[in-house]
Length: 196
Image (spheres, rainbow, N blue to C red):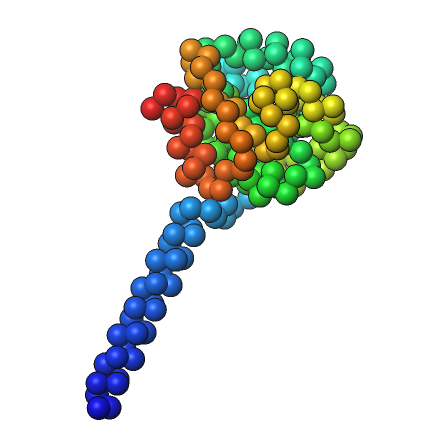
């Protein structure tokens, strides 16, 4: 009986170990943000020498641009024919904070083939937005949208975060809510911006 009990205990430990390993792997692939947070200098270095019009976006990295919806629409017109991802965020939005490292990572890894823009929606001041971007620098600018009207016009929603994808032909897809992982955002970019 002792041998049987020992075998059952060993089997239970083995099953538990497999369960723990599986859960760790699942959480690492489905919801973990990137382990390494990049600095603004690292982002600039990785995106330097990119093709136009993407290089113009990289030159304005982390800037909060004025002009609201008219300026944003003019930039969208200039980017027509380029795969594009727009991230609507706000500095006080907790899900935006959670997905910021994901956008940082993906915008750097895809920034030479896909344009990225931000919409800073409903922040009371630019200083709040700048503080947010100091914590989570990105390789692209954001348009300041204090009233939230530009964000609503582009995303068709008051919800934050929201992500808009445009493919080369201008077809739009809107995703409401945060992306939980680099893999999920990459998958959406391939499907909606790169038509792959």
